[in-house]
Image 1: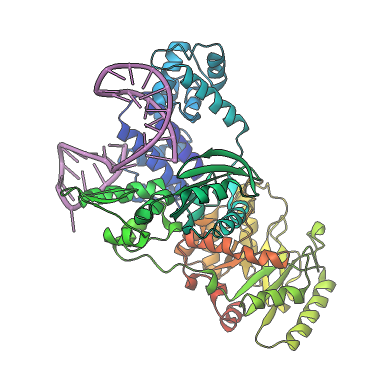
Image 2 (image 1 turned 60 degrees about the vertical axis):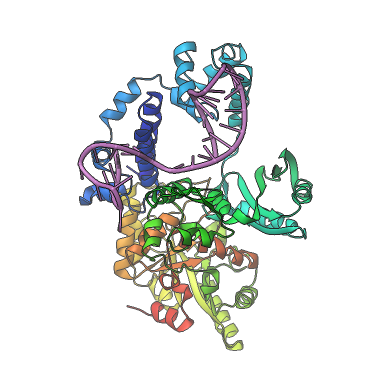
Length: 573
DNA sequence: GCCGTTTTCGGCCCGACTGTTTTCAGTCG
């Protein structure tokens, strides 16, 4: 059972006991444990098999650990079944409607016999909801609006789609001389792989003019709200952007608050509580004196709490606060640490630009090297290279290298891992290349055992240096292949095969928690763009975001190393 | 149900908004 499935059970339990009216803190305990399991870099199922102590997971104690073991070993949970039996099937779906909480949901069920969202819609339309005591016209109206909004609600948007739009808008706002600070907040700033609504925050002496500029930007399709300090707009692509203009003297605590995550803020406030400090978006209040201290910067806010600054990417309420206490937050990798890109395509296969153009663009970014890694012939749709064309390309690259100093084009291939785990090109040819990247591109529906064996066989091939986009997921499009990821990590560590963090914004594969776990196990990582054109080389920042969320430092990433070290790695074993 | 520099019991983040009420319950982020 996957972590996501386990987490869903505990989220459901939280909903059900909330409907039951149980202790708020018990509800929160289940929610917290569910989130921790969701974000766990380790497979819970594997931990149970290994006999690891689940109580090491923050928020998981005796009771939830026991339930988790039952769930993983038997596939079911008695406690969960009993709870579900107490309520009609669809009643907890009502909780997904903004404005409907447990109290109202239960009353709708008991007083009107509502058992589903559809039932509720009917009850609003025929006027029954509006006549309930302590509810009314406006509540009913709001419920109806929310139900309709839910039906048309768009998915969360991949960060790769959202970020360029936001940056364009922010660049335009920065043209206003009255604007002092401007930054993103929320999950976008934390670099989560998908984002919902987007918050941007700024400070200014002239709020009115900034708000006016914001709502009349050319990208704005619809103005949802416009007030004295805040405006919400819908831009092209149905992205909702909220601009908040806040007081300069508490900008630090406000930015901290709106960056979240919610769980990070809870952990921080709990800790503050023990220090007799009350934390809020307005600053830090000493409980004894009642004096509120304001902060213009986030750095000052964390410092006042006796904490090292915590980069936004780490603020998920897991271990970061405890590590900041011990001054153990590392210097995370940055774009500027990279010395090359080890996975790009050119017009020799399905890319758009020439080898030379790609190399020049990479060099212009300050890189020392680039690896040309076309698809192999098995990948018919991508005009993959057969043996002859690959040999021609090797010769071409050799010629280009002779013409240049201080930059190196590495010969390579992104070779297909066939359904049986064999590779698409003979070992003798692979041996001639500087770098061999292996990847799954076909037969993606194999069962876990077969798929894992298949990928392990490729990893164990002596010529394979990197496993590309290991889980093959496409955000919002294709689920990851079934893989025993821990087994892959172990084999990668053992054979010193690097795993790729593919920076394509719709891939981000490995993802953050996988990068975390792989790093923890001593697996060598690379961050590559898989660029199919010059402009794709800029995708590298998305890979950096994933790596930072995985607590990676420059030393964990192979392509932060100078050319000689990378070559030494490629010649290993 | 979890957890510990007020520890094995007794706490548990904080502020704001909305609607329906006259002081607050419910919900949200």
